[in-house]
Image (cartoon, rainbow, N blue to C red; front, top):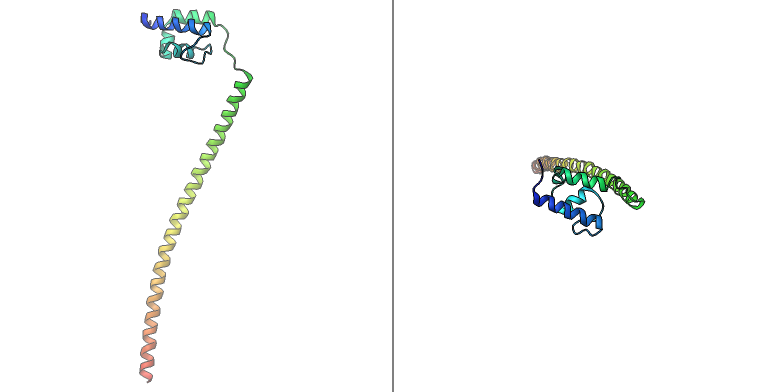
Length: 138
């Protein structure tokens, strides 16, 4: 499905700006993605405009290589993303353990309260029995 005349015109103007090194809407890198950004159309529109895409491929035949700085940056980003992913997994694991410990602590607290109530009841019974024994010996 070919593109409209208006889209084709946008793509040709964008290509001219990129080739001239005067981008308005992108970083100026010679990529199809930037052609779409520069023309302010979808990436799919670039691929539907077969004649314009063929012209682009003829003018930009080699793949765009990343500079050593860009390669290093991308490797650093990938490494940091991995560290962040592992840290998030660890946080999730520790949060699960914390939640489990909080539940156990709450159960033990309530058991402790019940045991103290039972103990107090027994002691009061003993005190009552002790008091009646004392009264009977008088």
